[in-house]
Length: 254
Image 1 (cartoon, helix red, strand yellow):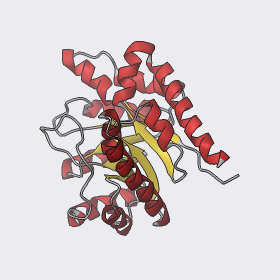
Image 2 (spheres, rainbow, N blue to C red; image 1 turned 135 degrees about the horizontal axis):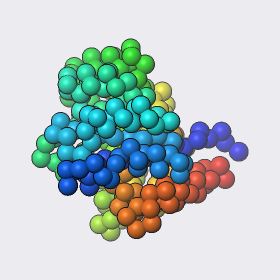
Image 3 (cartoon, one colour; image 1 turned 180 degrees about the vertical axis):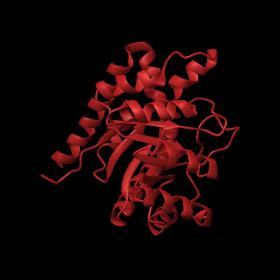
Image 4 (cartoon, rainbow, N blue to C red; image 1 turned 45 degrees about the vertical axis):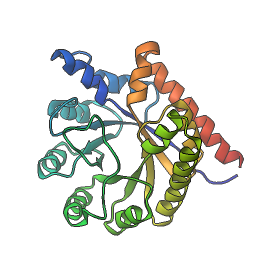
C-alpha cells in the first residue's frame, strides 16, 4: 500500500460574512461558523480579507486567530496594507491571490511569473515570520516553477476552470483541464512544493481530486455555505469529509 499523506479540509467562511453584511449587523457570525466547521471535522479555516471588505472584516481576522483551535489561512492580495495586517494577525498561513474590485470572486490564478519582483519581498517576509505561504495559481508549468524559485512552501491549484467545464457539460474541456491539474500536481510535488487545491469544488469534484496523492489540502467555501442553508454547516462539513475520504481511499487501493 502506498504511503499517502492525509488530506486536510480547509473551510472558507467568507460568505457567512457576506450574508451578515447584507444587513449590516452581527449575524450570522463568521466565528460561530468557523467553530461549527471545526467541531464537524474541518482541519482549518480560510478567510479572505479583501481591499473593499465586502465580506470578511479586519475584526473577523483578529477574532478568528484568537478563538479557533485549528490553523487560520489568511487569503489576501499581496499589497503592502494586507502584508502589514497579516503580519500583525500572525495566522498559520497566508494564501496570496489576485484581486480586482469589480470581480465577483477570484478570477484565475496569480501571475507569479509576471509579478515575480513584487511578490518576492512579501514571500520572504512571511517565510521569515514563520507564516506558511501558498500561491494560488493555475496548473501551468511556468507558474509552478516560478513558485518554487521564489521559495514559496506551497501552491494552491486553481480548480475553477475544471469545475466550470463539468458544470457546463463540456467533457472535452473538462478532460483537458483535468490533465493540466494532474500534471501540475505532479510537477509541483517534484519541485518540493506542498500542493493544495480549491475553487468551485463540490462533493463530486472534491472526491475526484482527493484521489491525486500529491494534493494534501482542499480549501472549499461557497458550495459548502450554500449547502449549509439546507442541511446545516456541520452536516455539510461531514459530507465533504466523507467525499474526500472516498476519493483518498482510491489512492490507497491503487
